[in-house]
View 1 (cartoon, rainbow, N blue to C red):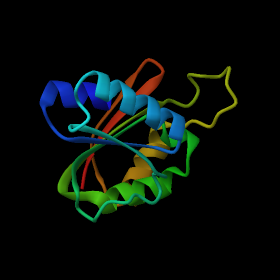
View 2 (tube, one colour; view 1 turned 180 degrees about the horizontal axis):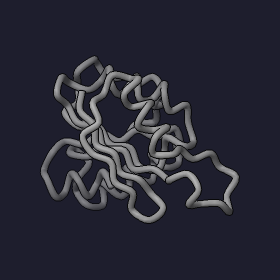
View 3 (cartoon, rainbow, N blue to C red; view 1 turned 30 degrees about the horizontal axis):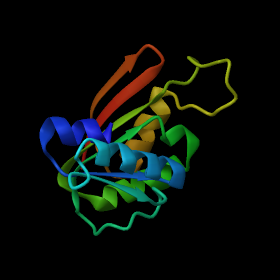
View 4 (tube, rainbow, N blue to C red; view 1 turned 45 degrees about the vertical axis):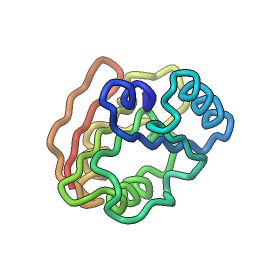
Amino acid sequence: MAIDIARRTGCTVYSVDSSRFAVDQARERAAARGLSKKATFLNQRSESLDFPSGFFDLVYTVKTLHETRAIEILREVHRVLRCRGKVVILDWVEGKMAWTRERYFSTGDLEEMVKETGFRLSGLEVLDDVMLLTTEK
């Protein structure tokens, strides 16, 4: 996704993953497309990002929060996001994936966490088995 965003917008994009393998694969794909200078991939934990406060204009997370300590990640996102910055969250919806054992959030749970960490909810949409939230700092 980061490679596509960099290619389509020309923006500098940073992608963080706790899996070194995933980071290495993404770096190879970016290099093959000539986007190594626009798409940077880092092996970091989302709960403690190595970026200064207010660094990002936009942060997005895709199907990640349900696997992690979501409240800690949202606090860290709040820290690295500039004032009036935007956050886009795409994650699974509770009850839609009954065949799995993973923990998923209800829309209310995620909405509450977003507000608790200092964000203002600007949009919430359920798309089949995922929810899309947009927030602003």
